[in-house]
Amino acid sequence: MVLASLSVLLLVCAATAEFNIVRHVSHAPRSLEPAVIPEAQFVVPITSTAPRRKSKKSNLESLRAFAAPNNTAVLEGADFDQEYLTEVTVGGQTFTAIVDTGSSDTWLINKDFKCFNLTGFPESTETCGFGSAGFDTNASSTFQSFPKVSFNISYGDGEFLSGGLGFDTVSVGGLTVTQQEIGVPDLAAWNGDGVNSGLIGLAYSGLTSAFNTTDPTKASSKNHIPYDPFFFTAVKQGAVSNPFFSLALNRGALVVNATEDLNLGFIAFGGMPPVDLDKTAVTVPVQGYSASTGEPSSTDAVFFYYTVDVDAYTFPGSTKVATSNNNTILDSGTTLNLVPTKVAKAYNAQFVPKATLDRDSGLYFVDCNATVPAFSVTLGGKVFPIDARDQILDAGTDDDGNTVCITGTQDGGADTPDNVFILGDVFLHNVVSTFNIQTNELTVTRRKKY
Ligand SMILES: *[C@@H]1O[C@H](CO)[C@@H](O)[C@H](O)[C@H]1NC(C)=O
Ligand SMILES: *[C@@H]1O[C@H](CO)[C@@H](O)[C@H](O)[C@H]1NC(C)=O
Ligand SMILES: *[C@@H]1O[C@H](CO)[C@@H](O)[C@H](O)[C@H]1NC(C)=O
Ligand SMILES: *[C@@H]1O[C@H](CO)[C@@H](O)[C@H](O)[C@H]1NC(C)=O
Ligand SMILES: *[C@@H]1O[C@H](CO)[C@@H](O)[C@H](O)[C@H]1NC(C)=O
Ligand SMILES: *[C@@H]1O[C@H](CO)[C@@H](O)[C@H](O)[C@H]1NC(C)=O
Ligand SMILES: *[C@@H]1O[C@H](CO)[C@@H](O)[C@H](O)[C@H]1NC(C)=O
Ligand SMILES: *[C@@H]1O[C@H](CO)[C@@H](O)[C@H](O)[C@H]1NC(C)=O
Image 1: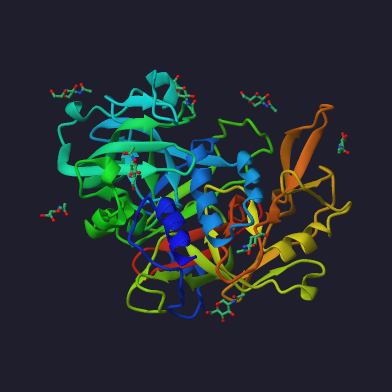
Image 2: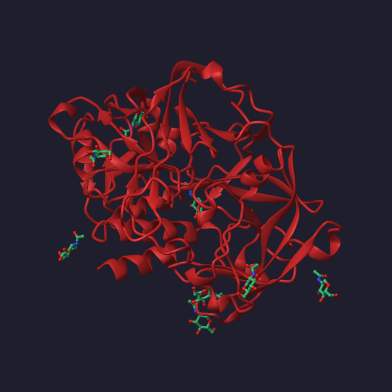
């Protein structure tokens, strides 16, 4: 059982160090006024979104399958998910890249890449669907290759990226780091969106994908060589004066195919983004996982995602349900909230008319004009309400051409201690989340209504 779980997790983490999921609680939450966090030094507007790539779905699916093997159907909801895109300059070349708090590598597709289908047969480069010709390492005067190592990300659905690594100057929103380790894969089996050419991962080094082998097929946890992701390098190089970055994701229009919405929010390095804040804020520990044999430990905790404990979900009738749950990831790459089954069931029953569970998709569908019951999330003793506008999402049309809607808060599986839940954009639209990579704390600040 443990072995099986580990192998799934290794897939998720692209072969990171072996470990067991044991949560480690480091310190008590504390409240904090937003004024304590200064304005950011560097602000990056999010310029567009693209449908979430299959590999990311697969990645989360594996993570959730690891934690709750019988509860993966709900991930159908991921079909509505969007990636957030911004501009990144590497070695003087500018690309559109995904910004992701759920992974850690910075990678750009190599200009010399070869495209394959999911079973490894060569395809035209167009088939892989990258948004540009790719990164030309020869044209960068600052690029240095990293010989004898390889980059390898393989996903459960068959997508993969592999190839070499190097170091180069990377700049995002004016924040520039030198000699950032980057992946420059030249083999790809990829279902791209035709927009982005790479990714900037903002999670921890445990999720990076460099391996000490010249043969990418030999990548394993034994030769994993974790490296500092972009923001970690920025802090080490003193390129940013504070060790935290913030995310403000704006509520866009309820349009499934919206690709250009110039007011999608901000990533802010070193402080707060330029959005109106309310007074309520709280700082809670990011939860780590024990690195060794399953013993809880405060010294060898490994951080992967931005995982927090949820004290409670509050909605009409919520006092009848146990709503506290641990192991909840704040993920900018997931649209919906995925909460424990009992919470989802009780909450969705409060819509007027009631939301109904569709067995095939595992999703709660609701009348697009339904009355939305109040819903809030308590973190570190502070209450963060979710706007009613985030709780009904356009889910396309049915066979008769009528618009159908789903609710924003869906079933994430049974509330077992090891299940993994998600607070996605539905929640994130209502707060600014500030990730401190030095104290391993997360500050959540309420936004003013917008
Ligand atoms: C998953 O379902 C199977 C078959 O119903 C059951 O045997 C197994 O115990 C379940 N696993 C978990 C973790 O609930
Ligand atoms: C990949 O291409 C080969 C050769 O055309 C084909 O047999 C195979 O089914 C394709 N695989 C997928 C997943 O499309
Ligand atoms: C970069 O230079 C190498 C060695 O000269 C060459 O093999 C490769 O094709 C060049 N790449 C590009 C994208 O021009
Ligand atoms: C890779 O492994 C070799 C042999 O163990 C070692 O000498 C080398 O320093 C390692 N390289 C890196 C980048 O860790
Ligand atoms: C990546 O590494 C895994 C082993 O961890 C291997 O099975 C896979 O083939 C590798 N992918 C590529 C594209 O080399
Ligand atoms: C969204 O785009 C897809 C692919 O371009 C298209 O098939 C679909 O009809 C569009 N949906 C709407 C609601 O416009
Ligand atoms: C969450 O973790 C805390 C601290 O370890 C524990 O006291 C609490 O019971 C856990 N809650 C759930 C629902 O597992
Ligand atoms: C929702 O309300 C609008 C106007 O208020 C109406 O045009 C639309 O048909 C309603 N939709 C449904 C599904 O009842």
